[in-house]
Amino acid sequence: MNNFKRNIPYNELPLLPPKCNLETTNILRKTIKASRALANLNGAIINLPNPRLFLDTIHFQEAKASSEIENIITTNDELYKSVVASKKFDNPASKEVISYKNALWHGLKQLESKPFITTNLCIDIMQKIKENTSSIRTTLGTTLSNVNGDVIYTPPSGEEIIRNKLSNLEGFINEDNSLDPLIKMALMHYQFEAIHPFSDGNGRTGRILLLLYLKMEKLLDIPALYLSEYIIQNKSEYYKRLRQVTEEEEWESWILYMLDMIESTAKNGLTRLRKIIELMKIMSEEIKTELPKEYSKDLIEIIFKLPYTKRQNLIDAKLGNPKTAGNYLMALEEKKYLKSVKVGKEKLYLNYRLMEILEKE
Image (cartoon, rainbow, N blue to C red; front, side):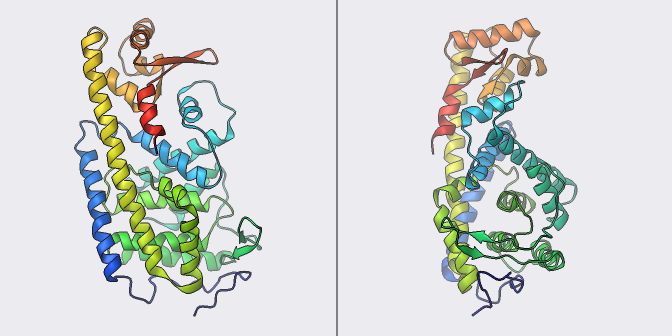
């Protein structure tokens, strides 16, 4: 049994990899299923004519769900209006979600130039999420409590100890090739959450690292997964499995949970992607028939990039001057492809059929 005590900093948190069998029959079978689901999603995305087209929408959905886990709640409607409108929204939840998405994009960009997950990258991502310059926790007394206020976990304390744990994690992620990458991913996620290196933003940083890791390991060329959606739907199970690793060194059920998350979200992501592609095809053909003068492939892509669009988006894509762009959008609204809404002095246009797909669990 380990030396874990809920009220005492877990400075003896074991280093990675754990000294137990991580390749049980159950784990290996589940790894095959999760890998297959991921490969199917990856294949579908890279075979799209424009693989990056839906990326903004997917990443905002992931950002929204990841923030929801931290009780930062916004609606799809508020979120996409905030993104597209020039008027600055006062909704702090939407602002936090947008910061999360920016942090994810930043992490992906960093990975392109340096394909490693490092302590500095973790700090960088957290700073982008929180929009501040804080770093590794130095204050004492950090504890994690349940809804009743009972302390359930006290993470390691002291900057040097935290940095040493992160250094071990960094080495494990980038250098240890003895395990399947998806099993490694489960271990990495537990360890990061257990180290809990920051005063705030640990959960969201940890979930961004999952997407970066899948990209780094070339398991998902374009990280288009709503991983957080699964955690929201299985939240109590998530925390229960984390605690079982800490208290009982029960790794198998945690790894199986994480593999199921990959398999389930990859399958759901593929279903949702197919629905969006099918809708895009249908609307494209309808618009081509009903509005041949206005129709263009670029116009269709603009109204599918995000659920809301506006005249300036068409102008930026060089589809015409302000008057022409406005006429295109009004024609689409007249034929009931879009619905307009006023935000301040600006008019936004909603692709409501796309939004309906995003709203479905």
